[in-house]
Amino acid sequence: MSKDQKFVALALVTSLFFIWGFALNLNPILIAHLKKACQLTDFQSSLVDSASYFAYFILPIPAARFMHRYGYKGGILLGLVLFAIGAFLFFPAAAVRSYAFFLSSLFVIFSGAAFLETAANPYITVLGDPSTATRRINFSQSFNGLAAALGPLAGGVFILSGKTLTAAQEAAMSPAQLNDYLNKEASSVQIPYLIIGLVVLVVAFLIFRTPLPEIVDDTEQSVEEDNRSLLNQIGSLLKISNLRNGIIAQFFYVGAQAGILGFFIRYSERVAGLEEKPASFYLTAATFCFMLGRFSGTFLMKYINPVKLLAFYCVMNVILLIVIFFLHGKFTVIALMGVTFFMSIMFPTVFSLSIRGLGQKTKLGSSLIIMGIVGGATIPPIMGLVSDASNIKFAYLVPIICFSYILYFATTNLRVKKLEVVSGH
Image (cartoon, rainbow, N blue to C red; front, side):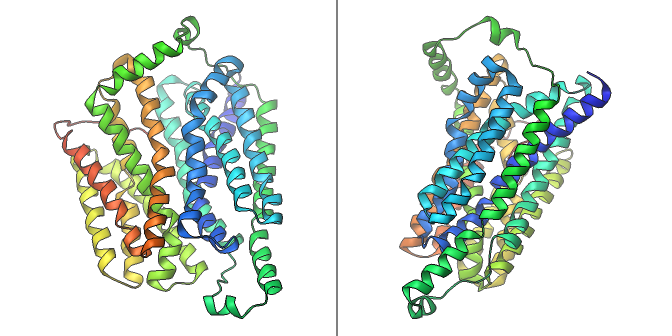
């Protein structure tokens, strides 16, 4: 493979990090938008995250098996095709204004994303000098961070109309007028997701035409583990208290992240009195705070014990969420942006602490921790139920439980002085 071919391959595989990051960070926009267009409760709108994160929970193992048989390039191509199909399905879903159709489309999109995420990191490691593999992974992950900032911004500009009816305005409309309004709102996702699908297909075509090195794992190809053996290994790993606690901590972290960002626009509207579009811009600012927190946190870990930093960030988030509960107005949105800053280091730090000392079992242990992201499918609906039963302020008490458990996990690891923090969500 020539130097030019490696550069092209690296650029294409790096684009995958941007693609799934962009889609995942459109979810907070979709939660607010579909709540309005499909006339949903907060609980129902939270199922946007559930459809996405359940795909991530269910598909990684089937994706790994598919790639074991057909290669990583085959897995990437299938992932991109699934992703594009899911994006195209938004067009008919909007035409019939069916929320179940939207959720099915999202599940297809993130089934494809699960294939992409399973393949991307191993590919980056072989596309160049092994001594610079860590640098390449971090470079590629930076595009995931860029997508996290651009997704809400693009969604706020091209999807949200900025027009939300009050109960009185809705009651004053005739059924035909209300139906026209809701149809127009639903249709605003059609063109953006059509464009996303076309761009993804272009990337799939370019990857299809580009020679990519195949990754061969000698151990994986020479030893076929049966299901009973795999279950025995999982059972053995789950007896390790630090790993078990780490899986639970990751469950709570991803759930808190999904819920906090997913209801951000609704919170800004109800508590701070912001209009829909300005609220989306505050959401974009919050994702920039997250990215700033990730970079600054990584820098601080050179001088501060990462475990102590994790514990301090958990305490800060608990304090901020309590403050948010008791106060009202725009300051609470600023405080919520602070929460996104302090939760930024949690995924990679919890991940690194959890796999510490697993040795040859690190690969399987890592898979179990990644499966903990099902928290993103679980915590937001709980927040939605709380919001529907009371109000959005009470819903934001739920993440306090999440960060409190992560604080407990951090305290059990205080003896750890140094830590190699990996990239992650």
